[in-house]
Length: 172
Image (tube, rainbow, N blue to C red; front, side, top):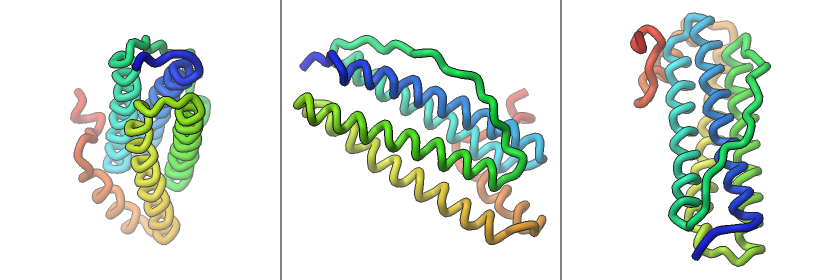
């Protein structure tokens, strides 16, 4: 079934939002590098890559159904995280924006009777629940650590072990 109309337009907006999320995570990785926390920076870079993959999934869905992906304008990042807690709170806010947008896509798909989009949207709903839970857990741990430098370094090491992330020194 060819995709068109409001749903196709909304998926294009979602592709842009996913790319915006990737850039937001990239900025957070730079902020964490500036705080000498390469492991946390690596975690954010892995998250940025995951967002790019999500954008590609939506784009492929459009292409498979005769639609045409079209990126919209992406505004520059204006906020910077000065602390680890600020970075993860920004991450959670971004994930919640994405979750809300995916729920809106689901509503549009059901109102238009586009059952072909529902499996993809179900996958994303599950993914977003997992993402929000993961970031919430990290926020809880950061709050427990507080000003404990050793605890923060342990968290940095742990988050740096996530597959898919690199530190800037490795990128050279």
